[in-house]
Structures are given as structure tokens and as C-alpha cells.
Image (cartoon, rainbow, N blue to C red):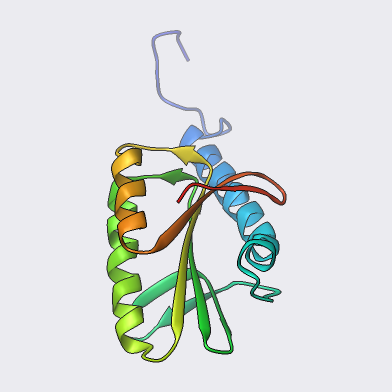
Length: 143
């Protein structure tokens, strides 16, 4: 392989695979510690937020029901406006289908992405909490 050759040898690691693995590990870390934040900040006693597909609504990274409350979460490494738009649509469909229950929606992230300020405004306007994860049980509520 010459210096100018950008192709990878078979035994070299593809950086996109490393990036995907790091993203996965960060998201797993958020998911592990998010229930503690929900208990402390919202007073809702959940032990786990499991992935759930709600028919006619879509998939949620975290989902739990506790009495008349439904907690849903979007977990991401980088918060981007387009992702918030998609989540807002899902949450609004869920709220329509869950008449009589309070839907508490949360987006947990680590890094700011494109359109971060607009994303925060959109989430706030739709009653969605955005929290930044710093590690383990260290979260900061943005909205």
C-alpha cells in the first residue's frame, strides 16, 4: 500500500464501523442510566425503559407505563433538528392514541448537532424534555 493509496487492507478497521460501535455504546450507556433520571427528576418509579414499537405510531428507544403516565424516550448521540421533527410527529400520534394518559416525552443526547437551537425550541413547543447526558447518572435538563 503506497502513501497515496486510500483503500483499506482487509485487516484494517473501517472507521465507520468504529464510529457505529462508539455510538452504540454511548446510547447503551444513556439507556442504562436514564431510568434513574426519570425517577429523580420526574418522580416516576421506573426500573427500565425498554424499546417498544407502538402499532400505528412507531418505534421508541425507551418506553414504560406507570399508572396513568406513559414515558417515551428517543436516545441519540447527536441531537439534530430532523430527528426532533420525526420524534415530535411520533409523540403527537402517541398522545392522540393514548387518550386519558399523560405522555411524557424525553430526548436524551450527548452532542449538539446541526440545528440544535431550533431543535430545542421545537421540542419545548411540543412539551418534550431534552436532556444532555454527561456520563453515568449525570444528566442536565435543557428544556
